[in-house]
Image (cartoon, rainbow, N blue to C red):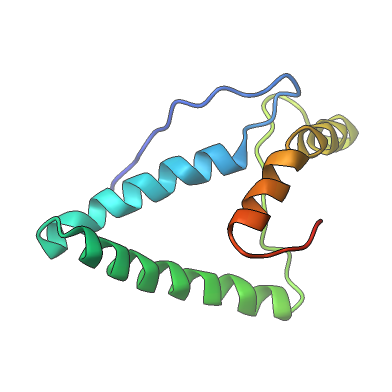
Length: 110
C-alpha cells in the first residue's frame, strides 16, 4: 500500500482549497509518469493528458448518470456549519475559479 501526504492548511473557514490540493496531486502525477518516458517533457505531457482524459471521461459519465462526483474537505465541522463554511470558501475563491475557467477556455461562469 502507498500513502501520500500533502501539507496544506485550511483557510479561515476551515476548508481545504481543493484547487490547491488538485495542483499538488497533478504535480505528483506528472512526476510519477516521468520515469516511464525517460523524463521527456513532450511525452510526459502526452501520457499525462491521456491519463487525465480517461479520468475526466469517468467523472463526466458519472455526472451524466446523475451522480454528484465532487467532494470538499472541511476540518472539524459538519452539518449546517460545514455547509456554511463551504459556501463562504467557494465565495472567497470565485475570482480564482473564473480566472481558471477563462484561462482553460471555458468562457462561462458558475
